Image 1 (tube, rainbow, N blue to C red):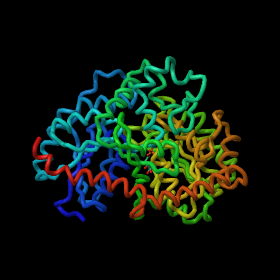
Image 2: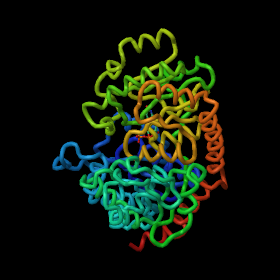
Image 3: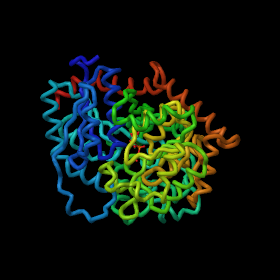
Image 4: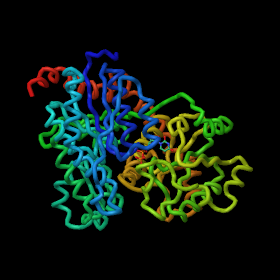
Length: 478
Ligand code: UDP
């Protein structure tokens, strides 16, 4: 444990707390279970206060450093975040190569592996140039999304139209059929450069030795069964999740949410949050407010400024809302819920895992970002799905139509529908009860997998064994 003789791992986190948080969890697990040390490498564009505080809270075995800024000013305004991340990564390859060479020297030959996350595939070139033999992808989302990306080079030639115009849901090996409009958002417009980038990543993943996926078999048994088999045309796939950021300590800044929850009955509160970057259009924000009131359930809502003036993921690079988000809520709403005590609204950010772990929390209305989904399952909280962007819509499909861990809010997003879906998940005797039972089952399966000898623990041990048995010797030859 913490021995300086263990392997050192360099890890690249592409922008977004949703990428950094699980990668850091992987680093912590490699340190605590396998005696490794790690360097988390981040991009200059994401040096937000939230990110800095997070990096500073990591244990000593996990250090961090930032790549120097790269110039992206030639990219068109409004370029997709997936394009920005991919470009920033591709343009950082020279700087990353020299960082890895420095790390190789400073760790005395212990640099055993390089791990890049899902948009960091081009950085595998830097690891190769620096002579890091073990090169892996960490895929912080699920096996459904991975199956899609691995199939993209072939789908690119076989699907003649836009995905949203497909007459039938897309069927991929083992996966829940995904209706065209719900497929991964960056694939929805083939003329947008981000589509090409995704196809490129699908090709580039083949350069990796292994793909570590933050998921587990019980939540998506179909693709798990297929991807666990070795195959010639792709790297080995290891489901190592659910890795979530679970920090039990209460900070002063958590007090507002947690002390309010302390005063609520068990399982009575629905937590409402759209991840680190999600925001709603003003109209939907108002319907949601009124729908929550109408549901008669208690609620804790992380409110962001609406998306009307920017993209749906406008807050992505910096989780702080730009303006006071409460000014967009319906007239009198905050006063009413404060007076009745039925709800609490907080601006921008809440200690999500502590909220989900709290005994008063009985439901989660979520944008279906994969970290949020995993956190909900780890704490056994049934979900109401309200997906926004990225792979969230297909996550909502696999959770509702597939395993049955969520109910999806109907597309119209009217207050009555919102209220009915929330009520069903919290208290309903039909579909809601089935969802609650399924989530309890998945909570158990997740915990079992991570225990010593469990499927997820064994998968990670196998990866690390590959790094340490053949890594050290060969490294010096490059
Ligand atoms: N998160 C949080 N408080 C918030 C919003 C988000 O702690 O108010 C955390 C959440 O617990 C999760 C991550 O940020 O770990 C969001 O990741 P996810 O994959 O769910 O969504 P993304 O932010 O990538 O859309």
